[in-house]
Image 1 (tube, helix red, strand yellow):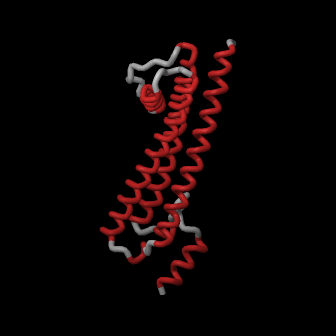
Image 2 (cartoon, rainbow, N blue to C red):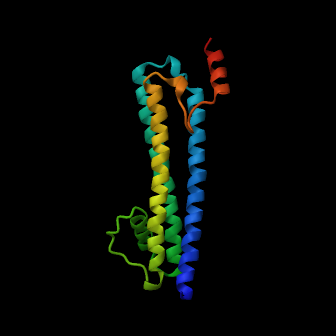
Image 3 (cartoon, rainbow, N blue to C red):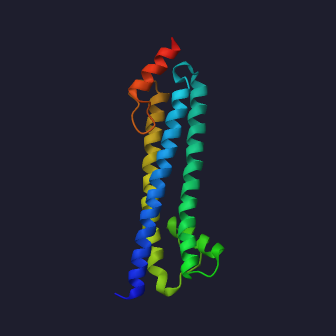
Length: 174
């Protein structure tokens, strides 16, 4: 294995670890914000249409936060490509990074030959990150569906209100 191949593996795997850590931190903050929001909203006394609009806006805000998180992670890869000289300009590095992370691959840009392995590693990273985001959205939608269909007491997942907080919310309603 050449020195450059080792550099690609070390650099690529380091960036994967960094972006997954960034993603975990970002999702934790999003989940905590959603939980805090749901603790403050009196879902039990909301009209059905208001509950549907709250669910729509919550999903839209979460989607925007996830898009920002993915863009930030793609920017980390782009800066790395530009810094090592794999692409000549930061705009090209950014386009290539977004293209690789989404596994689209149609930008027409190509990394310098000695750095191409990193592009493949970024594509693998993108699949992992988008998979994690999909799982998060699924958990959020599952919780929201439970709220919309009247099973608020059965809601589980990262956005659920813990039992001790739900008890405090019930006492405030009396």
